[in-house]
Image (cartoon, rainbow, N blue to C red; front, side, top):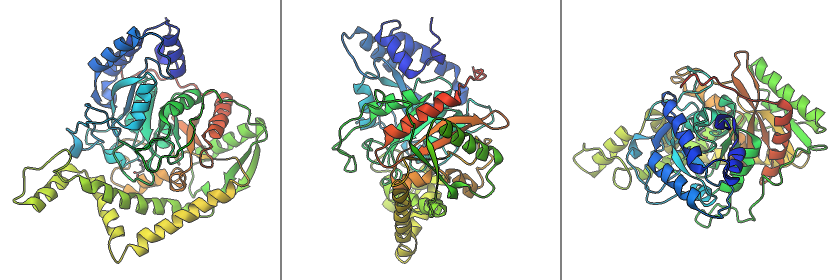
Length: 485
Ligand code: GLN
């Protein structure tokens, strides 16, 4: 009997398609794992009965052939799922049940997958450790006292612990790639507009992008193929032909030019991150790629720019949570304004309030030009840096994060040190270009470290191919002793 905990998504799809295993057996396996993995707190909602019924329905179908035939999948609780509670990790949406399905999840279901449950995340995807969730923090299966990263921390934790064969997250400033890096998994943030944002709880609309989180690069190509595609319901969706990322995946990277940006050698960078980067460069060199030193001069402004643009958009997006249209309503207050105030005061957590305050401030008259407009201008310069570099290189290699997973509670009282975690990931969001993180090594305590590949817009196939080749050479196979069971 195949050990499903050691099987990739692609292998499970093939087992189901060749009738070696039924969708129901696969579903029961993951449900058992989820029940045994409760201590990780990676799920906010499970829908086992519905999943079992979907599996039975799939097994009774004849001649269905989809990319995700018969696969149960848990998704970040930021994707609206019809008739299934969607909380965004917030008290204000604690009891929100959407009447519609997000386009991206709908795309997965059209390929034969179905919902297994909703995964924990930082409140409204604001955070880097999953500790801002109203539903409690998620544990990293790599170590009891470690955060899984954020904001897609529940997704990363569930994936690394084999509680779901693959998953999806969202990435506004690093929320797919950083948790992937912290849990020894693969995460890709696609080009802005490749995956529809329709039906995803909005954080910062000009930065938000959904993407796959998987055990390996092949699965990542498979999931991206399944979830991406033009959607007329999202005005920022790119209208182009769908790609066959999996079929076109290959390891031939001979002659490709890879840029190494000097500005990513940040001050006080731990030696192990530098070593990891060197290791990545060596691997690419040996595979026949050409390494080129490049400069992205405005990199140092990316983080401050992000922490103006993202809160500005968040403050505007979150204005809709007023106790009238969605979710929680406070019973306090003697008039409408007081009801609004107490609903938002009670419904939002501290980090969300901080962002709304910063966002409102940078957008307020008198400060708008000095902060928001200036940040938009700097954002353009950051994008121009990348455009310039991609005239000479095919992709850029950087570390994914400045450290491995940190301890639970270590940064909760220091927002700046929490924000610094995003230093290598936010530039790709600001420029709207794709980036992938793959596991590339371990720190001195054996905790995983990720390496990041960035390319120009719509070059997902290229970074998938480079990542595929690197993955082969790195030979990383994470094996956790399932201590949480
Ligand atoms: N950590 C970043 C933030 O808190 C990124 C979050 C995200 O990508 N959703 O804003």
